[in-house]
Image (cartoon, rainbow, N blue to C red; front, side, top):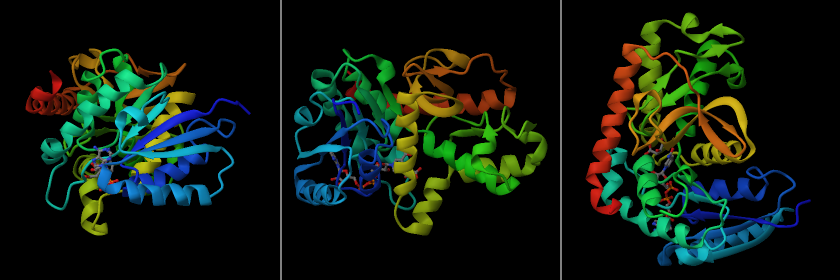
Length: 325
Ligand code: NAD
Ligand code: LMR
């Protein structure tokens, strides 16, 4: 077993996503079953006591890999020496709200946390923003951390990716693992574009197995609006599925995957998407870095959907211009 523990920060540690996420990290689901972990639970002062209770339960779970747990309301302390950070702590939306409606309340959380990451985190820090609106919050954190490479700031599109896989699996009576080359482009919002153009299952083209009407009028809106559907049915926003997707993202980022997955990463000009936003793209992970899948042909239909996401992300960026200075 490696002796040096990896330090993992979870913000919003007393919240509902963290209550699933922390157990998976402590179980070795991010770094692997041979790598010990130390957990930093960051909360606002009013919730540190509840986070202490979460820490007590984590201890009571007697995880073999867990080397320490610390609860704090100080971002500087939490991110000191951190190798990975899940920025979850933020207000969830309620029924009838869009995620972008949270920007005013949540945006200001991510500047100070980005700065604390900049000043205190380990050189290999990887940051996954989950708190909504995730793409633009990640942009805010990235801007506040000029000494950290931009590529270390991601936002989560993996829940959307997993939702797309599961809708396809249900429709075609296959396992989620049989699907390849599914992509969710864009923003973690209702504008996102779950795209089956390149997708295959067992060597067959998915687009040949489903009808266009189902794809356009059921699959795309269902995946794109699944968050709202969960809120409607469950009464609260998704939590365990969000935690599971966050684990999938960080695991693959660190350990690599040749399977295409959707990750929101800083745009690099690929597919005509201008730099300066954090956007969901088709990616693989090699040597600890996401690589955009290159060379895909993009139809007019796809272009229109992708452009709508770019426009929305640019508008969100404009709305938080004050936080990007
Ligand atoms: P929750 O209300 O249960 O928990 C949020 C926690 O964050 C609270 O305990 C709160 O005290 C804490 N918090 C608030 N400000 C903080 C700060 N500055 N520092 C540290 N902690 C802080 O919410 P939840 O259900 O866990 O959801 C958290 C966020 O994740 C929401 O914004 C939600 O919309 C978002 N979310 C995103 C995805 C995604 O796919 N990207 C999926 C599900 C939920
Ligand atoms: C989700 O997609 O489930 C989350 O972003 C929560 C929400 O507000 O939809």
